[in-house]
Amino acid sequence: MRNKRGDAIPEHFNSAEAAGEFWDTHSAADYWNEMGDEEMDFDIQKRTFLVPVDARIYLIAKKKAEAEHRTAEQLINTLLNRELAKT
Image (cartoon, rainbow, N blue to C red; front, side, top):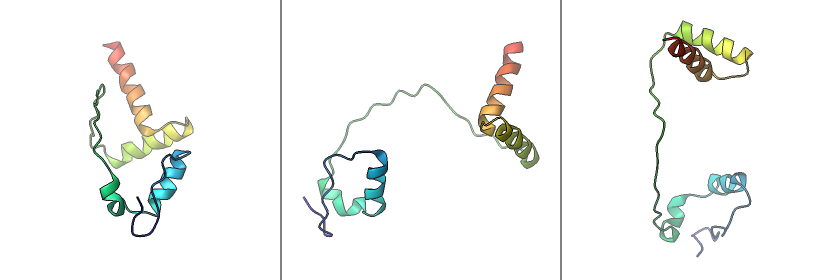
């Protein structure tokens, strides 16, 4: 089925990039009648909490993490896991 622009949704995209390029230039609202319901199950194994951190502390962690080619989140989690292992 074609939308008002005349473009059909491809049966398959060759890559995530190709899908992204398509949807960057097309609106899902134009294809609403072609879209069906999908059933999904989620098995969440990990929880993440967002904690406010003083800007100065974050910038120090970010700078150190970048020097180690990691994210600030990875650096902070590593440091805290080490501390927890000591207890």
